[in-house]
Length: 377
Ligand code: GH3
Ligand code: MG
Ligand code: MG
Ligand code: MG
Image (cartoon, rainbow, N blue to C red; front, top):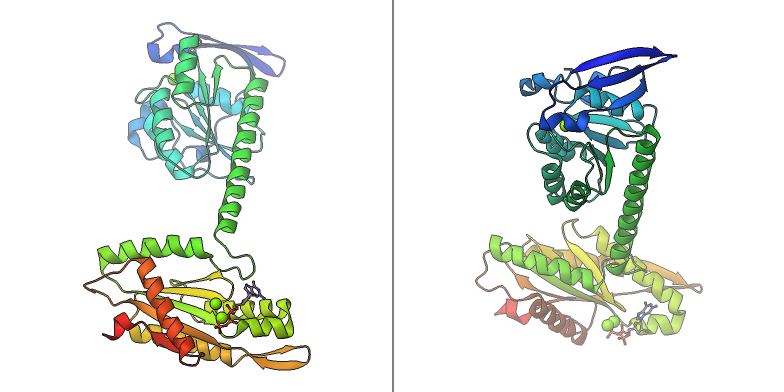
């Protein structure tokens, strides 16, 4: 290959004359009028100590930096000159570039940096662009990566194959600088929309699993979490405990002081639940004035102690409504099994055992902790 340069004002018109083009290089044959091309900074090449790539003229130096915006474009291109053309075209844009000269590097950099966008050459010495696309699409990350295929293969069949392999867009060489910038901008728009949808989905998911008044997990969240813990307990033989809790004579509080006062009591009880359980435990609101605590990796004595502590903390917190001081109390029923237990009941069974113990606590005077009869035998 020869580069023929001729000064045109501040730029140099470069004609690339391919004397013996190989199949892998056809996509790079181009005639372009470009400004003098600055050297790609060394930090853009993470593969600096990899001697396998010495034939691809990769400079050796530091790791890639991330620009202020945090947006990264991974340029996958085996031809050093094409890399420079792309870098020149995207110079001054609000994102940073990192470069891969082989398919293997592309996959590694994708996993390491999870760039928002990739500009992907087709023909390369190891994996081709289609294979890389397929590999990248089989790796699932939360954030979406927009892939623009940039290749000399112009026939419609190749376009179809590129898009089918997982590319989102297809551009041909020689590319038009403004078009590349515009297509990259389109890619970032897609990525941003994807990010917004994901954030909204996360919020909706959280809302669907949270009791809005107390911020505690709701019945569905407790069910999902407890079911997972129980199957893990079956494999790893740790203990699981369920504590059913119910506020005493709560209807009286509502009827006497009003619904808002009742809500305050519920919120306060929730705060105590959070404060007196471990982060690894789960406490949630089933509905009304009924709560459930699920604890793992604890002994029955620990669990009874925890329930007793919650009971006394709540009892000791006086509320003042309409100038009256009042004390609220709560009752608890405990069910569960120790580590290495022979029998591991289902979550539904544990809940109904805890409920029966709670009923017993109500029957025998309220403001107390009772243990399921299954644990007493
Ligand atoms: P016990 O000691 O037997 O549990 O009696 P209780 O009065 O606590 O139980 P009951 O089931 O008779 O009453 C529960 C009350 O809880 C009735 C209902 O209006 C009230 N409640 C349910 N959800 C809420 C809520 O979100 N806020 C308020 N303030 N009250 C609620
Ligand atoms: Mg190539
Ligand atoms: Mg009650
Ligand atoms: Mg109740």
